[in-house]
Amino acid sequence: MSYEVLNHTADAVVRGVGASWEEAFGEAARAMFSLMVELDQVELKETVGIRASAEDLGALLVAWLGELLTQRDLRGMVFARFRPRIYRTQQGWRLVGQAQGEALDRARHRLGVEVKAATYAGLKVEEKDGRYLAQCVVDL
Image 1 (cartoon, rainbow, N blue to C red):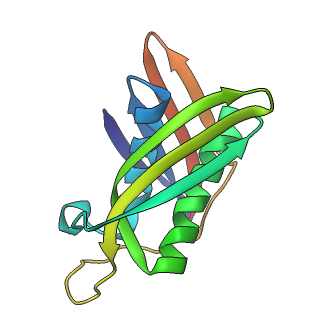
Image 2: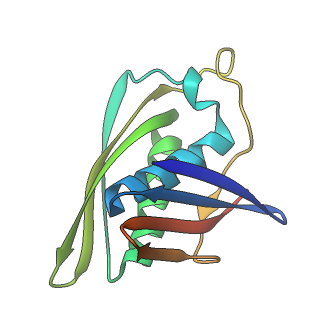
C-alpha cells in the first residue's frame, strides 16, 4: 500500500495504490488528508460511517473523497485511517466504509492546506497486474 501527492498547478493530484480497490481508495483518502494535516498527529478516537454510490469506479472515488470532506466539515474532524468496502451492484458501484480520526485541534495539529473538493480532473481508476490505482485532482 502506498500513497502519493503530486504537484498540479493550484491543485493537487492524490493517488492511492494498493492490492485491491479498497486499499487504493483508502490510500487516496490518506493522500488527500495528508495535504491538510500531518497524519501521524491524528489520534483514532472516533469512527464515522461513510457511504457513497456511483455508476462507475471513477465517479465512486470522487463521491468517496467528497463525502469524507463533507464529514470533515460537518463534524470539525480530521481523519487518518480509512476502511472502505466496495461492492458492485445492478446500478453500478457502492461503497460502505469508515473513517477514523478526531476533532481538529489547531493548537496540536500541524495544518497544511485546505482541500475544498475532489474533482473529475485527472481521474484515473485502473487495475494492472494485480495493482490497483485510484487518482484524481483535488481543489485547494
